[in-house]
Length: 95
Image 1 (cartoon, rainbow, N blue to C red):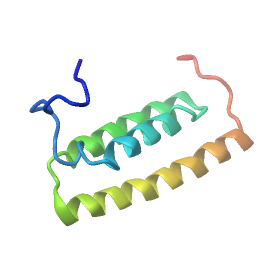
Image 2: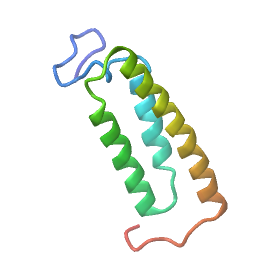
Image 3: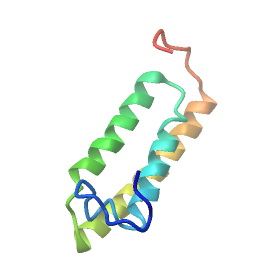
């Protein structure tokens, strides 16, 4: 457990420590969990985690571009969730 006043552990990256990246990660995962279909939901969560892992060491302008791309992906994900709720699919065997 790390308090907000402790020094960041070495596993945290510059991108993950920004004030916008962590809430963006949480929002993307939260929105991905709202997808009705099991396969799409697991893919979305996996893709969000992989994207943040890939951009872990970005700093400066590269990090800002990655954050903007993530915000655009969040909007796409929100639209996908709404479409999934309008046209629900049958439950998967995995659920």
